[in-house]
Image 1 (cartoon, helix red, strand yellow):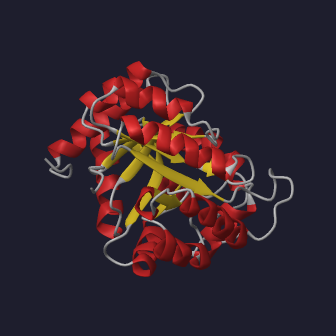
Image 2 (tube, rainbow, N blue to C red; image 1 turned 180 degrees about the vertical axis):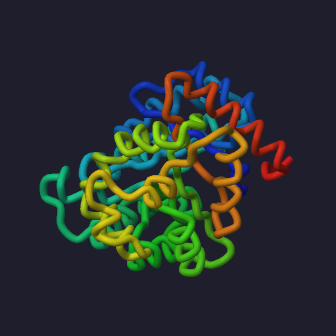
Length: 280
């Protein structure tokens, strides 16, 4: 059975996500909750949110293959899907050289990890890869349901769709910020993405899709920040979502930046519906 993701997903930090947030997002029309910050192999945060809700899909974005034992992940997947079939997606990723001891070839590591999950009975159509470069995108096309990514732009989405073809999932993630003061919003966006732009995998991918060293030198160019963090009023953010969908996204994950993340996400979902983007 195909998972019904809808067009909008919401990012929550795995360690802090609450059942109340998941219920509120489900009521607001979100199709998925994406658990950020390397969820542990036991997948307990995902299970907790699924137990509290009735429809919404929960995905990991992403399980770090250097930190989470693949056999334990597979056991957790089966434990949870026995209770909640067709509502769990496993996004997995190869981490980053800057943070993961023993980091070597990401494609080789992911391939071995996928082999273990497959042997343990985790179906390929419940797996997504955090794929930035062409090699990982081709692996996602061959071995998974598609790709889930952060710190990307519509140009990367377009390229991912070309490699994965028409039937795979392409799930980009964006920061969203309800603030109509452009300079203030950019300052907040810069602070939010600064740690990630210091990671070679993200920076190299942005260079690959057309950004320059000048764009990527702190304090970063306005055009880069505007592409990574959707900001303005809810209608402007909804328009940014539409650009991603037009570029080939199946579904867009939104990470609310602000003091009331669920309120922000609720406002954006309403604006998307008003623009007749959200499927009914």
